Structures are given as C-alpha cells and as structure tokens.
Image (cartoon, rainbow, N blue to C red):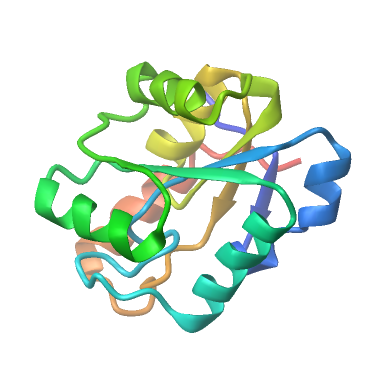
Length: 161
C-alpha cells in the first residue's frame, strides 16, 4: 500500500488557497494535534490563527476531525478555534470523516483533508475520495526519538510524484 498525498507542504500556512479554490475545493477537514495545534497544549500559534481567519474570509468551510480521545480537550479546542471539532475519530476509518462532510454540507471532491500523519489523515482522506495535504508536524524537532522513528517509518508508505 502506498499513500499519495495530493500535496506535501511544510506548514499549514504554506497551503495555496487560491489554487485550492480554483480546483473546486470549498472546505477543509483538519487534523488537530501537530497539524494546526501543538499536541495537548490548547494553544494556537498566531500565524495559524490568522491563517484560519483568512480561509474563513475567503469562503472556505472548515472542521477538525481528530483521533484524540480526550473529550474535554477537543471541546476546548473547538472553543479556541471557533470551528466544529470531532474527537476520537479512529482515522483512517471514514465514519467521522463522512460526518464532517454532512456538517460542512460538501461532497468529497470539494474537500481537502490536511494532516501530519500519512497512515491516518492522508489515507483516511484518500479513502474518502478527497484531496489531501500532508504537512510536517508542528513539534517535529521536540518529539521523542521513538515518535521520530515511527514518523520516518510512516513516510516509507508515502509516494511522492
């Protein structure tokens, strides 16, 4: 099995919004931890906050679908982000990704799934039939050596064109 993201960028703020809009994308499904927020911090970096406001101003809809099982944490993230957050999603399973489509009232071809994990976020997005963008994890330089090893192993499944 190979996972082939539509795009690979270093940071969510590197995503070309004009290009996505012109390709028919009208909504984002974001991963939470290490994609738009450092894990378990409840803190949103200013550049990410500004970028999320920009995507809303440009007419995109957005939602977060996270595998994080901590309900209090995902509820706090929802308040902070001011967008819906679905937690404990079990990606790459599609159940909650389909639920996100219903909430956004969009079709898979109108969505881009953005995340830092190839075998959960990107594979789940591909299984949904959406475009996908793989980003580098926000805390990649601070992660435990074992987590860095697992990420490197996961990247072996990523096909880059």
